[in-house]
Amino acid sequence: MRDRSCRYWQQAFQPSPYHPQQQVCNQPACQSQRRSDYHRQKIASDPVYQQVCLESPRKWRRANPDYWKKYRQAHPEQVERNCRKQRCRDQKRRLVNLANNNLATCKALSFQSLDSSGVASFASCKQHPFEIAPSAGL
Ligand SMILES: [Zn+2]
Image 1 (cartoon, rainbow, N blue to C red):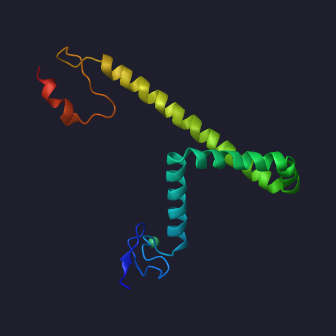
Image 2: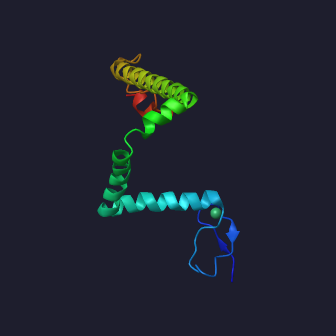
């Protein structure tokens, strides 16, 4: 059987004789990517599958109401680790929000500023100088 190029890693591989249409090699990373792509695509296109995927963990939690409570009691180091990671995510989100707010303020100010000829300058934080050059002579 001829070699084929893996969809994800572009690595040549031999398709399995049992799956001659195989598009993805047997590397665990590629197979994991294939499964998660399939799952994402299936959830988006199949409402029944989506419902089952939503219901399954809910059903499990109803059947095992104390599982996570007991797990947290038995694994205090995991609780601590989780708290630390959540604090880190919270801080990152605050910084991103702060940066976005500063960017918005900067844009608002640049839209109001006038250049030396008295013409309003529309240079924003993101614009490249060449993009605003033609209007500078007006
Ligand atoms: Zn691969």
